Amino acid sequence: MRRRSFLTGALAAAALPRAAFAQTARASVLKYVPQADLTVLDPIGTTAYVTRHHALMVYDQLYGLDSQLKAQPQMVEGHTVEEDGKRWTFKLRDGLKFHDGEPVRGRDCVASIKRWAARDALGQALMARVADMSAPDDRSFVIRLTKPFGALLDALAKVGPPALVVMPERFANTDPFKPITEAIGSGPFKWVPGERLVGARAVYEKFDGYRPREGGTPDWLSGPKIAHFDRVEWLVMPDPATASGALQSGEADWWENPPNDLLPPLERNRNIVSEQLNPLGIMGTGIFNCLHPPFDKPAVRRVVLEAMSQADFMTSVAGTDTSMWREGVGIFPPGTPMASDVGLDAITSKRDMPALREKLKQAGYQGEKVVLMSASDQSSLAAIGEVGHDLLRQLGMNVEFVVSDWGTLVQRRGKKEPPSQGGWNMFHTTWLGLDVVNPAVMQPLRANGAKAWFGWPDIPDLQRLIDAWLDAPDTEAQKRVAADIQKVALEQVPFLPTGQYFSKSVYRRNVTGILKGQIVFWNARRV
Image (cartoon, rainbow, N blue to C red):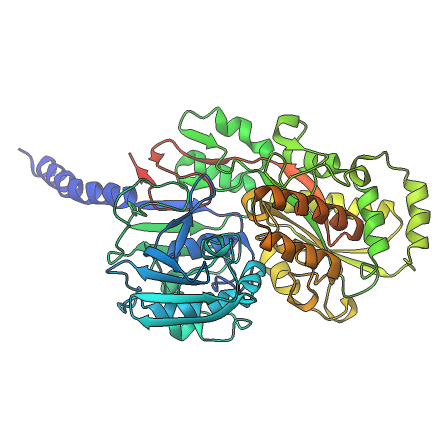
């Protein structure tokens, strides 16, 4: 054998283990393209979905919703109910521990519930009915109520942002209005802060100390959470064409939210699967700042509602295929128990724009500048924002259209100062149907002023109805109250319901086990 041939063969043989190792390493890594960059780590620091997806990786929940929207035990082993429904005792599963090695204790759960409740509408309703919460030992905690509360388990399973997750007591005891900047939970994946690249990458690693729930099958957020990937990388790609190319080339494995107009070429690729992971669709909302003119006036908000075309909003994001969107939509997702047609005439009636412009003046609009925020790095929100901009201009409003990335919008929307001092008047966002399925979880519906979601509407009649819904004895009673809620909401207009549409996620065919309901990363594996 010649020396050159020998060396060539030896080098090739030496390269084989390295190549095999590289293939094995890549197989254990899931590369995911999120809808936007992760700007807030605190699970309750924002209602941005990207933060909720992060929270469900790093943290765990006391209860998890299944596909029937029933709360199933997750971190808890079970519970007992005494004193006619006013005393609930919860026992934690054995072996739960945080990523820093500390065990999960009952007092961590109590502190986490209190911190979450300070920022969440359903949490506020729960705490208004709580007499006391305590942790008699490390593996249990007790909630004592002033009166029975039928939505207690729904509250403990709350996943609509902000989700109720459990964190160490030292973090949970901090000011809920000052976001924490560390992420230490007890979930199936650990946050890797050293590999974070703002605007480009977020990294998670499998937590070997996680103990999945025994028995059952994964169903939405219930059942065993088994991580099959050693590492998950979030690759931020604001440009849809770049994300599409990465998925088709295999540089990415999963793209959360592609624009509908890019789906056809992806669906023709035999190596790619497209799937609607969210059966309740996506609900569009225009959020008014009710603190400052002109949207501090309900009559002005009502004119915008009457001038709106839900079809215009929905076609901008979902195209002309009417199977992918719905108009004539109220405040709850169509087909769900609380949905009704009460008050929908205001949305479905024919629009007379000249008459509406005159009505706007009579409602008190005096030519004030309207600061409309829009996110450019999420194609769906960018499209909806353009329609919203056009709507306000058609009404004759003086609009300042402020376009930024989603993270910047999220930071600005928390400002209560007047628009002239860095505040805002309106922005558009969307919600998964599950997160607005009833008054208990619908953040933009809350109408209790300073305690409400961004926009801070103060509508006492609406808030009283929401409280009545929470105390309703059964589903039929809830439906009656929900109809009244929609009537008042479409009269006072705390937010603009812009319709419902459906979207798909796309992923490589060699990735299986992706669960429906929410974006989660356990159960997924490569084949």
